[in-house]
Image (cartoon, helix red, strand yellow):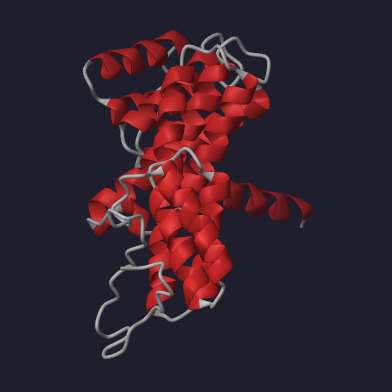
Length: 281
């Protein structure tokens, strides 16, 4: 009995092994890994030929197969650039973020911080330009706020980086954009007959973004909001600031009286929206 059981077991195992062998014969042959240096070379060649997506694929293969190899660190830096150039800004941001966490003392860490902010910036800019075809100041600026913060973090850490001038220039643009956005929201609140909310937006620009071009209009917003709220002394004070800071303002007459914004007819169809009390034309 023991022999018969053993023979039966052997035949069963042999049959199972034969079936496995037959199945494996139908599977594609797995190519052996390339040397680490070859992955890196192929990636550089793709970048030189303006093929960032191909370069990113090669660099990710290198990262997967040789995570602690000789080229692993420069490959991760190049991957940030390749993903960015391919328009995959979210991936570039994530790769830069990982590099910052994993290699805080690397000689090129300033580049990773810079590219993190630039990826956020370009991602927001591309979305607005491609899908909305509207003035960015009229849309949500959450991602621009994030980009501003990331550039500020980069400049705080590496003020003398070779990438600092570009980051500063982009921060100026972002400040202007965010300030303009605040003013556009104030106009929305005027249409909704919510002058207190409009006032807050105007004050935010005056206080937080005083060097931006939008501050002139923001001062006009505060004057108009104060008048609508019946706070005429405050309106006069802000009118004085507007006249002194912007004597040729489009919101002033030649004799320095305030020119109110024109509301759309649907906001106030038949009545005057502001009482002048000598402040407006």
